Each structure stands twice: as C-alpha cells, then as structure tokens.
Image (cartoon, rainbow, N blue to C red; front, side, top):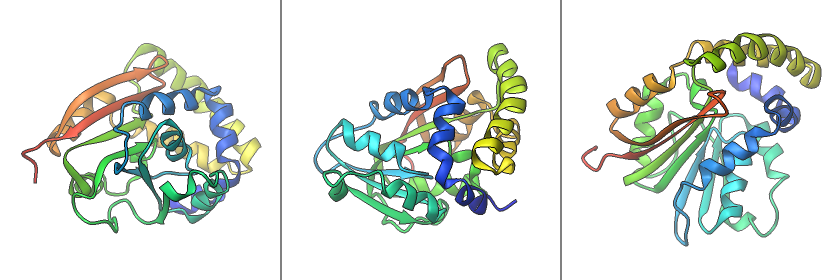
Amino acid sequence: MNVRELFSNISGTYDLLNRVLSFGADQRWRKQGVSLLPHGAGVRVLDLACGTLDMSLQYLRQGEGEVYAADFALPMLLTGRMKASPTLDPRLHLVCTDGTRLPFPSRFFDAVMCAWGVRNFSNLPGGLKEIRRILKPNGSVLILEFFRPAKTFSKIFSKTYGRHVIPRLGKWLSKDGGAYDYLHRSVQGFYSLEEYQGVLKDSGFDIQIAKDLTGGISSLVLANLNGMSE
C-alpha cells in the first residue's frame, strides 16, 4: 500500500474525520501535548508528519516560537496551509519531505512533535535516528499515538469501534474506505505504549512522561534526548 497516496487522497476530509471519529477529543489531546513543549523567542520546533497542521497551529497559538511543519504528502500541507492566519504565517514553515531524510542541519531543533504519525514510518529506526540528529542536546520529543491496545477498555474499543465503526464512517465521509481500514491494521501491528518506551530508550531518549489518554484510546509520550547521545 502506498501510504503517501492514501493520505493525499483523504486530505480534504481529514480534519472532519478526526473530529467525528474521536468525538472531538483529538483537539484536547493536541492542546495537552503542546503545553508540555518549550515556548519562547528563538525556539524552533519540528512538527513531523504534520498532516493538515493542527498540531503546528495549536503550538503557535499557545506562545512564542517557530514551527517547521513537515509531511511527505503535499496535499495535506496545502490543505493545512489554508487554515493559517496571517499573524501566524511568519513563524510557520512548510516542508514536504520524508521523515527518514530530513533536510535540516544537525542540532537545529529544540523539540520535535509527531501526532499519530510514527506508525506510518516505513523505517522507524531511521526516523528516530533523524530525530536524534536534528535535536539539540537534551531536546524534547513529543509523541501522540494510537499504540497497540494493552488495557481492557482500549482493547474493547479497538475491536468494536476501531475495527467496525471507524472504517465505515471513514468510507462514508471520505469516499476512501482503504485509509481507515489501514488505520485499524496499523494500530494492531504497532508497538504497545510500554514497548515503544523501550524503543525510545534504546534510541538514546529518557522518558519524562508516558500515559494513556481517554482510557488508552490514544497515548502521550514525552522524552528528552539523552545528553550522552551522539
């Protein structure tokens, strides 16, 4: 399956589907995550796999700092670009690129955030290596993700709503059922929250926060680049 094409095809209805399928909780999750990141004049943050810029715009509204929004699906970036206001434009930079080959200098960013995007990396170790390269020492990485369910409520939710309702609603609203079939399959084939913490630790990050959101439907991980990492 061509994941870039899949996301490009649903760019026009992506925001609507996020709101409907999460009952609006996705906005609350983003706001909570962004509040944990550094803000201030001169702070540079990378929004990796940024989609239609919801995470980028949430960050910019909360305080000072610049955001570089990167995604491999150009239609997603263009759809998001239409939502940015003129007052935020000078602090927002759009880059169409693959997450495993980022066009930025080493130690360029104070923080990296990635909302529901790491599951889509074709090469997860390569993506983490790039994040490590472009982060400043002790820089932060914030991950919001649908990890493989490990608790009773999230397992039931995934087997019912995730497996049956989301693909049907997704197909009805976006006219592309394949994208939301893929969502369920990718979650089931991904790491659990506990397993992913181990992956981050092995890649040179120190876990600061790791917690489930809304009963484990989604999860949040905040980690800092270990100062001893290369």
